[in-house]
Amino acid sequence: MKHNHLTMPSSSKTKKKSSTKEGSQNNDCIMEFPKPLDPGLLGREKGESLEQKRLRKAAIKEHRQLRRKIRKINQLNFRQEKERQIKNSMQTMIVH
Image 1 (tube, rainbow, N blue to C red):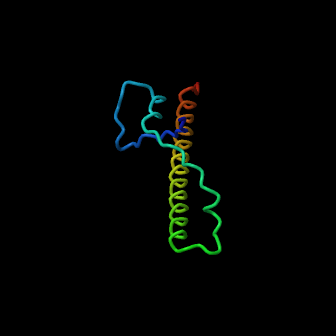
Image 2: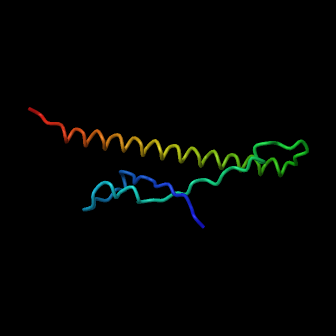
Image 3: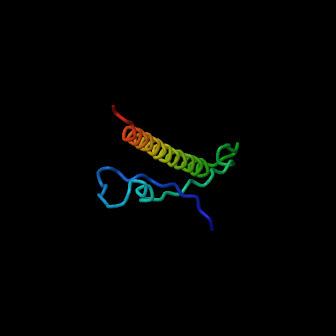
């Protein structure tokens, strides 16, 4: 079975210094993409029982939490990449 994976950046507090280059740090943690939310959960049935309502709401809440976590990770990845590109462009600038 094939899985989609999302890599998590390493945090600066637990970062260990290594002799490898910065590019290899992106493979520290792997997080799976969320499974698609069942469209049946989004719609409410007219005669829905309390148990069905509780399960539907719990599934939606869990999905939203996971999406927020992934969004936060993506923002951090883009921020780190931007900082890395700025750092690299500063190193390549020639000063006369």
